[in-house]
Image (tube, rainbow, N blue to C red; front, side, top):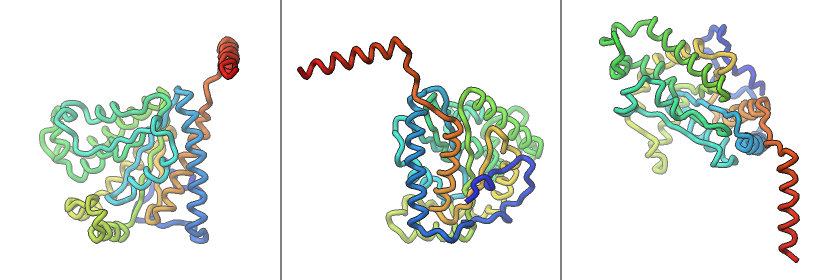
Length: 293
């Protein structure tokens, strides 16, 4: 499993339809994959604890994908062992009236992680170059200067928006927040199977929306939008990773491995204690021990 092969380079010329959505490792059994994921989750938890204590840097994880790609499940399985105090999840749906009174990045900037935190964006500012590109009428709701009709939302408009996103992320990284971006890549057939499962399983009815079927008609349009977004916004400091996601367990393992490697590279550490504080600790220890006598 070479997770580095999942990274998108800005020079990559690819089509999502030509990238495999299936696992590249068939020889491992489910038990082995679960064991590997379990071990990685433990290591992620240890590093997250240090990150929280250090309180100087942070990590932003962005999850994007077609409907039913497995974003919720990824969060559940990879973050199950971490300290809840140090992890925050933000899900972005249709912007509110207040949010539409600001630029499209405003509401996302409000949710960036504090020092010491890991924040997960379940969908993100990329919706503004994905669903908004498939349905450009959504851009008109932003009431942008000189953009008062769909025909004015042209190629230059989207190129400008990619640049704005890159600048936003560069500024975020410069101020101590590392960024990882994952596109959970599933096949149209697998999406169909997951939709059917949601319909047939009463406990999953809440996950299904009739709008999912409506948006499925735009499959090719979304793939086109993703291709352009990935190519134009995968940078050295904020790379995209295309994760084969037809097999959920493999996707979780791959994403967990990349997060673990990133945290290792960040190398968080517990805050050092100076001589004065060490002396006070020693005195406190002596006082507490005397209480037992």
